[in-house]
Each structure stands twice: as structure tokens, then as C-alpha cells.
Length: 199
Image (tube, rainbow, N blue to C red; front, side):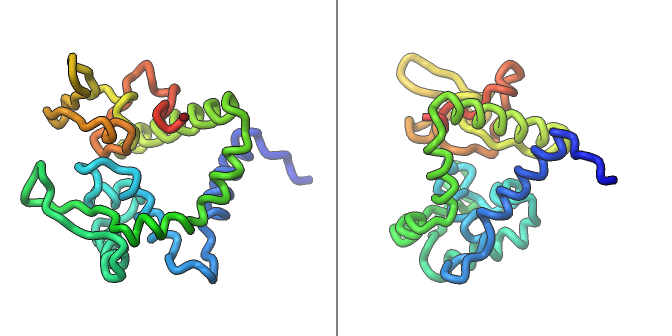
């Protein structure tokens, strides 16, 4: 007799299944699942996070593999490289107009549409739960967590601007809603999730 799965097992299996299903290779797609992930990552990340090493951490892969994925997007002109403004020794990547246009065909949009069909409270609860799980898993594995400024322990506000204590720099308004590799969740916010993405 096959024993029934514990609800936690079933939830974990469904999360993995959803991730794989949405990233399954579509014969009509011009990009692989890893290339789509990279394109999304650079579109959603702040300037200091759009680097090969940050993408490698986010993708849980090696720096060499991450660099190959980035090069495969650079060749057709979907991303472009530039010297980092904060550290001239390193490079960062930006989406080109062609790369931003490519995101209009992102296969993830199907899942986004299904999530949009949820009511606001349900969406907020899912976001809170998944963000908390992602941060807890990163902590258990002693790996980096990724999140946005407003839930980060480095984040602060002055009279005129947002400020990052980790970078010792003011933040542009649009950067406070982007992913950051220096993210450190506040202990009291570990289960609150990424509030910026809830809107």
C-alpha cells in the first residue's frame, strides 16, 4: 500500500513541478530556460547586482556557467556590458532595447497571468509565504538571499532619499524595488516577504 504524502512533501513537490513546468523548453522559443532566467534577473536587479557572480549565486550555478549564459545573450545583442560605476574593476550588464522587447514573449507570462487571476489578499499571502521560504532556505544552506531594499536590514531613509548602509550610498527611487545580492532580511521580516513585488 502506498502511503499518502505528508502535506509539506506535496507542497514541495508542487513548487518544484511548477518551476519545471514553466521553464520547460518550448520549441518555438528562441531562448533556453537558463537564458530566460538570466534575462529576467538582469531586468529585475539593481545596478550592483547585474554581475556574473550575482547571477551565478541566484541561479545556484558556477561562475563559468553563468558567464557562458550571459555571453549567449550578449552575442545576439540582448544584453550589453559596461564597467560598474561603483567598482571600475568589475562589469555589469543591462538589457538592450532588443532584450527588453524579448521579455514581452517570456514564457513565464502564462504563470504570471494565472497569479494575476488570484485576488489581492491571496496573491499577497502567496508572495509572503514564498519569500519567507526562499530566505529561510538560503539561511539553512548558508547561501545568499535575494530581495528588495524595503525588507532589507541595510535599508534606511534620510530626509530626502533612500540609503543602503551596505553600499554606503544613496539609492535611486527605482532601485529600491529591484533585486539586490547584498540583501539581508530583517529578522522580524523573515516571513513578510517582498512587499515591493506585491503591488
